Amino acid sequence: MASKHSFFWFVLLIGSGSAVAQLRTTPPFSKPEYSNESLAFRYTPPDGMHDTTERSKLEIQEQTKSSGTTLAVSALLAMSSGPDNDATDLGSVTIETYPRERLSNLDDINAEGKMSAWMAGTSSLPGKPRSVVLGGQNFVVFVVGKQEGSTRKGIVIWTTIRKDKLLSFVFTGNSPEQLMKLAESMKSIQFF
Image 1 (cartoon, rainbow, N blue to C red):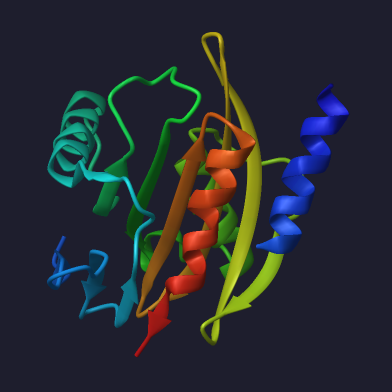
Image 2: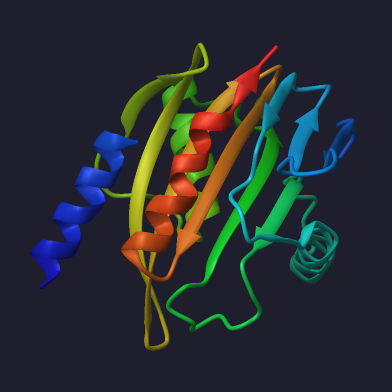
């Protein structure tokens, strides 16, 4: 069974603050679009997601305060398909940044790997990332499995360097089908 899941994640990978930003919907049947002027990109989140950005920003502030650090991770966008963390159809999308200068001792690939590990909630990620060019931008992509209680989650992390920021798109799903649906939304990204 483990190799079946590993194969799925491999196939998925192959197939696949001060920022001025906004999530907007244009009438009548358009999908909401996230736009970030300072990092010069647009992204269309998957259908069925609810904006949880403010809650995510508060959680980051609380974690920073309780750890006594000055961690500069910024949540640009956070969305979830629902409140039940164990539901098989649960999925989430987050977009976060970190100043590239804070990891100046690392080359770009290792800085992107470090950011991706943070986004996965680990100190490091096993294996090498896949390099992908999307919308003219170079990304490193990691696929990670993570056990949370009785739920096995899949995580796909796309990280790049954009305008002196490490920029990560993090997709988390409680099922391979949900994760694939979420990760497919990266095709909507446009850089300008």
